[in-house]
Length: 117
Image (tube, helix red, strand yellow):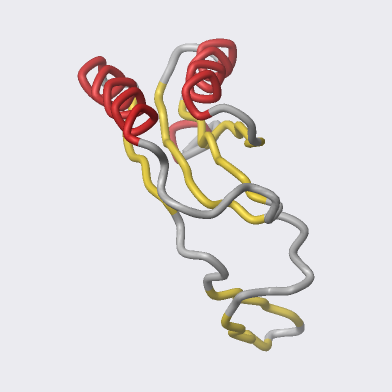
């Protein structure tokens, strides 16, 4: 089962680079997940981005930032584990390293997950 673990930001987190201890601990955690084959991809996301909207056959492209957004996804990890519970445990380990914050875990479905595909 694949899960997308996303880190969100509502604008209240302090800006700036993480301290050296956090970088070291996160490096170890990412290395462990990579070695075990659990971590498929990880990264941070640009602020704002580009919004694509399709309505009535017309596609509109809007560049961010978007003032109306209450929170935005700022980072992600794509993982492959056996159960949702394993994904939750990995997320708990991530937040134990990072500290305060919020995120979302969503299962990722692909062609192999669609019956008859």
